[in-house]
Amino acid sequence: MDLSIKNNKKRLWFSQLKQWLPLLLILIVLTLVFSTGLHQYLSFESLKNHRALLIAWTNEHVLLSAFSFMVIYTVAVAVSVPGAVFLTLAGGFLFGPIFGTILVVLSATMGSILLYFAVKTSLGDWFAHKATGWVSRMRQGFQENAFSYLLFLRLVPLFPFWVVNIVPAILGVNPVTFIAATFLGIMPGSLVYVLLGNGLNHVFATHQQPNFGIILDPILFYPLLALASLSLLPVIYRKFIKKK
Image (cartoon, rainbow, N blue to C red; front, side):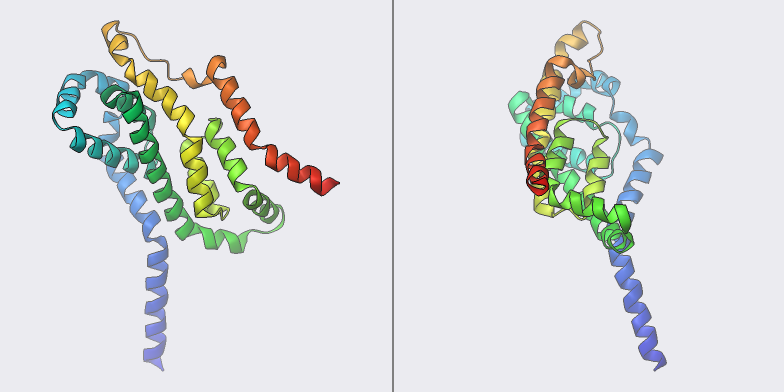
């Protein structure tokens, strides 16, 4: 009898460890990044100071540099290290507008997926059991219109990128819906910053600073807002049909 109780406790402990391990690993990596100062390399100054070395290495080892870039970008997004915008600039600067956008979108999507599943595994079930009242209704409403809501949040940068990775996992959004909305929604913004990065040679030559708020410029922001608003039309239509 005692042996059976001990075995049950061990199973419960391993089950809890398995549940929290993905999120724990992300927190460990994030702690290591900040404690070792690696996050300081994700800056415009770092890109400016090492640009000649980076360009030379990229031209000599295209595939290896592309793979390394994707790994670094994916990990940075997965552990939510501030500085992904600088990696996006670097993608445009080193790989050009087309190849750079492809690498950025794929890497950002993969990093988002890793964080999404880590949070969903660790906190998803717990939050589902705790959600009551208006929280439960919000959870249900988000799930019903998940693709439209997520696409809107991806297209319009109203919230930090990591927040839009975590909230869907907590609210129980379907993984396929999350991946599709993320992949499609980050394309326009990624292209804007990759194009900005592609023109950094002129910025470096004139000793200027890139306009990191370019995405909020009315010329770009209003079309993105209009596109994002279209993604909410299915939600508005459902609300209208329910009222009728």
